[in-house]
Image 1: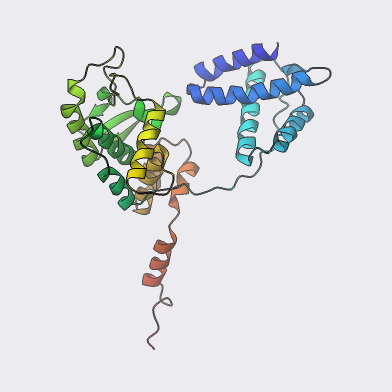
Image 2 (image 1 turned 45 degrees about the vertical axis):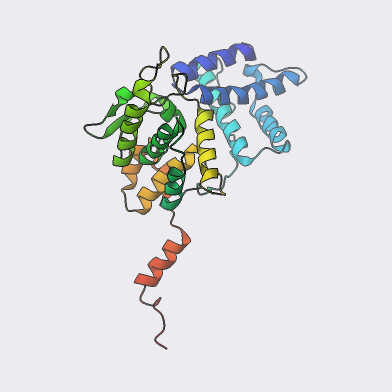
Amino acid sequence: MTWNETIDSFRTYLVLEKSLSPNSVEAYLNDIRKLAAYCEKLTPPLDPKEASYNVLNEFLMVLKDTGVTPRTQARSISSIKSFFKYLLYDGTIGLNPATSLDSPKIGRSLPSILSVEEIEAMIDSIDMNKQEGQRNKAILETLYSCGLRVSELVNLKLSQINFRTGYIKIEGKGNKERIVPLGARAKDEIRCYLKKDRDKMKKARGHEDILFLNKMGKALSRVMIFNIIKETARRAGLSKVVSPHTFRHSFASHLVNGGADIRTVQDMLGHESILTTEIYTHLDNNFTRDTVTNFHPRAKKSRK
């Protein structure tokens, strides 16, 4: 099989078997296309069956020399491993040449989060005189209340919200469903948005059940959510970079540092591994210092 044929087959596998999002599928395929371009430029050119461990390793060395980050290298290796694992599963190859590829070590950086005061400052800075003001306020409250991914927010449907019980049903990565509590403030702001704006709007066909709509009655795009948050952070006077994911990080960090059970937070975030959620168990320096000062017998101030 040619590279184009195997890549097309791999795409089908990722969509139908792995149920990955379009963005994830495209990320995988871009990595494999780069490998394909490298192999086709070799003398003689190599097809997927002829790509050995040494060839893959040389490709990764070339990739590293271009100056890509260790995180990008690790993602490329993950894509290559998944690709050849699929070819082995499909019977295209008899041995997997990617099994022994080593990923670079990546430092586990702590996510950027907002304080409660910064979140309140952003929400308070929304211009409620604008037509979209109530909608944007409901968006921020929902992000912080539920810890949603931006893709989950833009696809959130009215039919997924149970106002009586105070829960929403989220369809996350891999079409996996989870139930997340909807905070009182978020619930109030959504109801206000429905009554004040959305109920009076003309909805575009196919978007009738989407919660957050633009002026055309269609679902908001991911880019629009990023722009709303960027502009709101600017109005609030925040100098740090704030994105929809910052609200997700803040949601999780505030819960964990407030004493919430880590596995409960894992379920609400939709993390497959508890290791992903454990990054939120970090404590800020002031909290650590105050804890030691208040409770360690040798940390009390001297009587002198």
